[in-house]
Length: 371
Image (cartoon, rainbow, N blue to C red):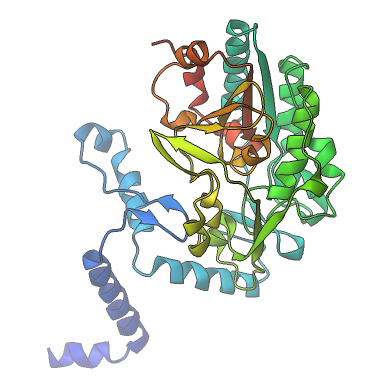
């Protein structure tokens, strides 16, 4: 034993790191398991239920690895240290986020698989055939790299929104598509996309809303008649993933409204302003992402909106124009839509997604389900 101790003393660095790793492993083993990451605004991987079939198909071990990565002790601190070290080394990305000019952060995008996108176009075409008696529109919002092109560093792996929108333009009836690329590109000198978040700003959503209203033959609210309320220190999803150490916080904005939203019979303001005091301030719009909700407006006609979170700051502009706005998030819809369309007799139906979501969304297949 004495000889062993003497030999170990010759390798102090090895001993130090060995003790450190074992200590971290033990601490990690007994650390509490969290269901959700407030910082990253996502649900964390749960411990997978064991199955011999998954084990033999090499599906169980990857789930264990995902669980371990999501619950490693002091995970947020390690992400921050990784960001700082890689920035010092000149790297322009971290944890799936690409750095751009002037503090802009973008989703890293490397896939060339457009299979799901093409399926989604097919689902919408089939839906429109069945509801050809109604005004159906599709608005696919380009994400920041497709509009703020001067903020994207040369060679950065970001999404090609032009390819997606060009494909959709060629394969969906032109009278249905609302292409907002041009109107957004005319305002790139304005604050139309957040730097630290994957959403467009309320101002960006306003320009897209104006284009939509013109397309369907309705009058849009004049910008000068709107009051934008600003909230400082908004750090969005891209910051949460990258923990970029020299990030400049965004300013979130919204328009004042006394409208209310009905979610499962519970009626509240369309804005959950308590969320302005937490990290995920964007969740204040429409009180997050309800599966189905109704807003009573001050105008005429009924509209069904099938959407992702890009619609959340878009919808408030529509309240003075429509009598009723029903929003549906297909992630939480488990039945066919036709019963709702027949019951409410909607005048308009709008698909409003951002290009990144539309590219991979597997829930759109449910728009053609029958009860």
